[in-house]
Length: 497
Image (tube, rainbow, N blue to C red; front, side, top):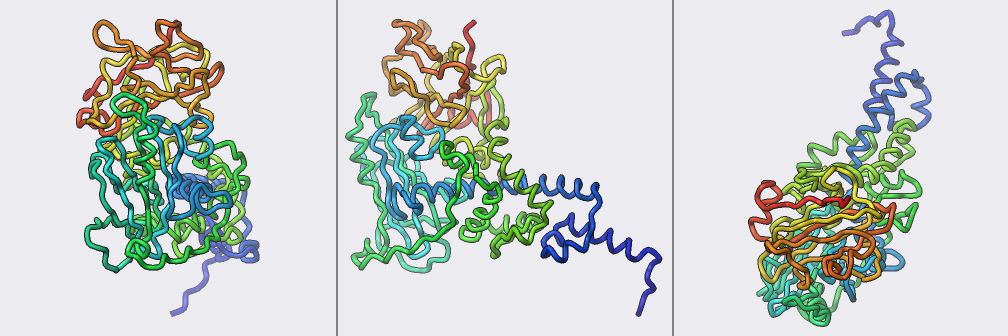
């Protein structure tokens, strides 16, 4: 059957074409095809706004993966690696500002020494050897490329007696040796991150911590079983080009903002998201040219859409750095219980990747953030503050609790004349008040000899800073803080006037 053309056929076709561009269909055609469609200014504004909104949510979803890609380049596969894939870089000391900057690791825990190691599970499983620490607290966080801490060795999960664990990539069908516990990874690359407590029963024991950290070792399955080690693959990944190397990789600050989408495409195709996200979420990103199984090609994206994508990529890092987060108790930001292993809580995942990369699950560690004082004003250098704890954050020995101060500009600890970056149960000389509580003095200059034991140095004016109280091996009461603000008395930060 043949239908007669409507009177305004050409106008209808043009309108449909404009709508298809807004939906991304013609927006992905080559330039010659796009040139045949003339958009009116209001169409362009609508397309730009719609594309920016979509791109910003896509960047929120994909930013953690791009951050891990960038961190892997910085620490493992780039020209100056800290440790090649399937090996471990071990920090020699606590996380001073200089060491934090060298690692590119934001909001570090300074009660521990760290190890970092990216493991490539595509060829074979990697066996993780964990020692008996004789009761010293340690754990190995195992993080997929989407920043989910999906498994642990040590800590509350497996204890401190050690063992042998096989990290197995997707699709591996082989057989593991006897006595090795299998841990299946959702992505073919993972990051392992040991943390070893540098204090033992209240006393600094850096040598003992280093001994435990040295005994945490990844080894390929072939080598573990006495065979010839498999040859290392050649890694030829596009190098991230940072606009400001002084910022951590989580700032997502690229010379060319569109490189964000190049790297997201490469990383996503190597480390696909879970199947439910492939089915339900990825189709929405097709108008941006983001598809699983295809390399993103900017030449096939409308210039209007590209401009929106560039702006979204440029803005996502600064937005996340200042985004209000979690529930608020006494002007402290308490993260939701999804922290660490996020599921489809993309907002929390993005915020944590930006501001506290590789945060742990609440079962192993809890955190909250103080960026505001009791009057709702940002914490700033030059001011004097106090925070009074009724008691230390409850934990299960050999765990610990602490409160650490960080520079808001770069998420690293703040240089200070006494080289003190935290206070907690690892600083037993903290003076108590008559009722058993204790007050911490937060300011750039000393509060005086009688209070210096409780002094947490802050940056000078006009620097902005934040605090992170945390507990490792937390009790259930401490874990409940994340879902019930009355579970434990979260103290406010009070400015001294």
